[in-house]
Image (cartoon, rainbow, N blue to C red; front, side):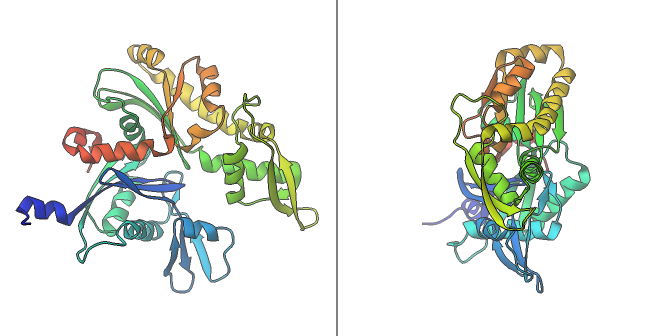
Length: 346
């Protein structure tokens, strides 16, 4: 089989859509999710060599000895540790290229970023991608990628409201005619919910737990409302008793978690109301018809859709597979780069 020059070029170029999230990093290649790993890296303290990335590094988180340190390179949706981010991106690309042929392909990346990101933070994302081997890097805003990912035609003169609750940020945007008309980006999201749970367990039960345990509690019994139709069973929480210093276990119900998350969820609600207040009247009419779309891991918090609906008096829709809505939209934009290039910044 003989390849044309264009065929050779496509063979040597690997196109990747990346959702570089605070909690998880997802990579799409050829319309398939090939990497879905926690955004964390473990390094050897003395040499700085990479020991583990993703799930393997997450197993070490909170259990390190003096020779190992684990780093979450992203904080509040942006890169906090430039070098660790570069190592992590490079390592995750290697994961998908484990069976790669004898030649390293050139990388073309589309990466999604929070809508409230600064120019300096944007530059850090681009630099990390380029130093990881990317020859071409395009950036797309998360709410726009989420809208594309859930099948909304963003070019229409129709207003749609997207709320993407990730690990570090909650992105709220009203979009129409291929652009963001008004948006709110707050640094209250999944990580903040975890910290609320850690603080609540310490304050109310004198029990010290780590962030990983808090994450498990949130997934198992997390709720945004005090009353659920199908409540989860109480969850056994293991930690250290602050009074005696001895490990102990207690059972916690979803009512308690709903109570401890209340203040953070109120901040999300306030940001939603601020975005709605900024919306032009014609777009407000569209949102009344179309409702609000919830994406991101936070969309899976039990009862959140009902709570937001009660606060706004609008219909709230949870996207299908909300965890992957953003990366799916980023992948669609990459596949149809000619059509969606106006959504991206190079």
